[in-house]
Length: 88
Image 1 (cartoon, rainbow, N blue to C red):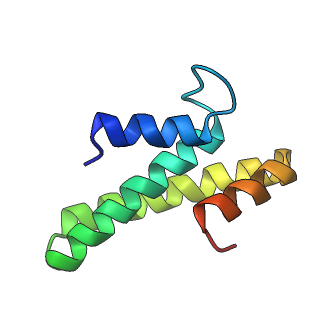
Image 2 (image 1 turned 135 degrees about the horizontal axis):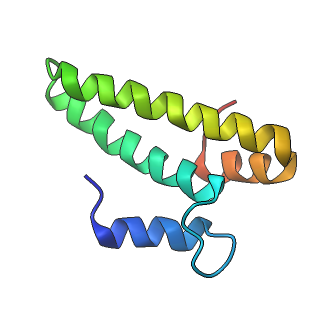
């Protein structure tokens, strides 16, 4: 689970302007952070199927946000994928 300090640091790094918490950039960054943490949890607990389902939902949600960003602003999409280290 993301602590408020980690969450605010991720928001600060990817926000487009002051007080930005809802842009696709920020949402993708937060989802990526949660996905990383949940992946580590599932490596320790391979039979936790409820968390695995949540992970799959987060991955699908992130994919939707990335697709939106790719169609509307290709430059921001490329910068975000490079910054987060996501592969296309």
